[in-house]
Length: 246
Image (tube, rainbow, N blue to C red; front, top):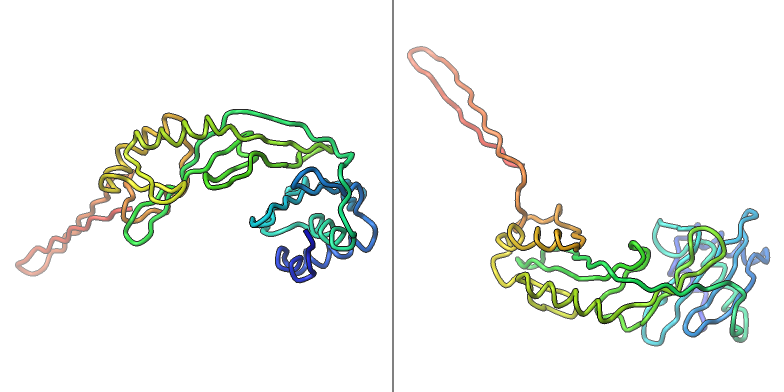
């Protein structure tokens, strides 16, 4: 896959993109190589060697990750440097001396809640390796390469379709029906489902996200606060009662 300068700029913040260009110009990129749909590179920055991974699959968005654990959105400077190295070579060589360890395990089910158009929607995703990797139901890939946050190792996290299917079936037994691929909506009133069924899913090991942002289907967990104010006037007594909810 060839990347144009415009493509590279699109994936990184301006200051990060500039730093990535500088690293590439300084010759910081080494061990550039392909493993199936993935491109690995070792990028040295400040005397520390980082591992950048770019996943290139036809008709799918470009994915990238780095052992520097950059978390400000978009690509880090090491990924940008690797992108420039890719654009400058005629073909990325096969193979890499960066070690890749295959890991398998059971996924944890995650439900991301949101409200739209008066509906409560629950998007299901599958988290592996303690949340190191997350897959959506619609993703076709069977694995993902993820660099370790320390050392020079890359993990090849392999999906378990059978376990994902079991989790997918489990939510159907708790009052959810398919809305689109990987997205569900309650078969009963949203607030009732949030109050009665969602806690059961949480007890069964599903991780719940977004519940605190719900409005129409939110279940209040605090007691209302009641206040009374009395004002005495000439031959009168006024009483004001206030009730406040969270």
